[in-house]
Image: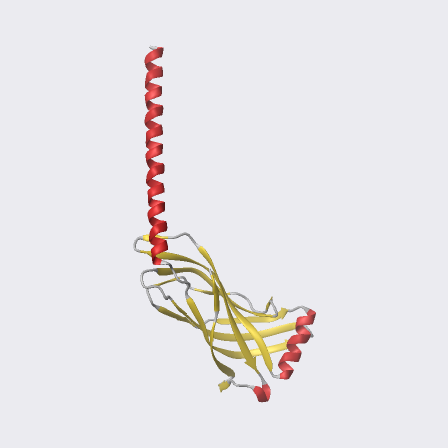
Length: 207
């Protein structure tokens, strides 16, 4: 009786090992096929352009408090012919001398098909945002000199889609330079209570 039980247990173990080996081989084949398809398709990063920026307010108070309201228009193009892009999360904000000067503004998740273009026009703002003392001085000086260089940043997570295959999430970092001019040097167009700057500035993209 004991011999029979041991024989059945041994058969079960062999069967489980075969099933496990089969599953591992299947997963390996799927992975190899996916990598081959991925290598053949060679996905390209999305291309971002900062089209314009509209300044509704940009004021330095105290020596190191900044209040600003800016609307930016950003376009994104998927250059791939066979790969779609899921934008699962996108946050837009502005920086000055590597310091964040506005709050995050989220863009709703979206899917971008082959060769498609998406355009977003979010508002980014901050009220009495503290900046480092040396940045406060530099910002006031730049504004007095007539030109402030900001960086409009887009941080997010994306996934690639080819056929029915969808990848895991990748981090997306986009950096768009925006030269904002003031006073007699201003290149902006007055629109109501705001000033609009046509920038058409290509952004750097890291995935």
